[in-house]
Amino acid sequence: MPDATVRLACDTHAVLDGGDHSILIGRVEALATEKQTSLIYYRRQFASPRPTVLEEAG
Image (cartoon, rainbow, N blue to C red; front, side, top):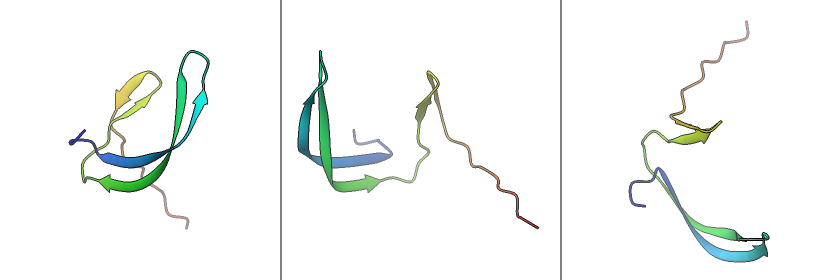
């Protein structure tokens, strides 16, 4: 996925039985990030994260 915000290259570490599917566990070998807004899936909706404003302790 060339337009992804984050790309991971992994080697297979383990394959676990997940009942009707397999669960793949990977060991990250390389990581690439891009300077663009991420898309997240949360509470059954897609959204872009918003910056959090932190108040200074006085």
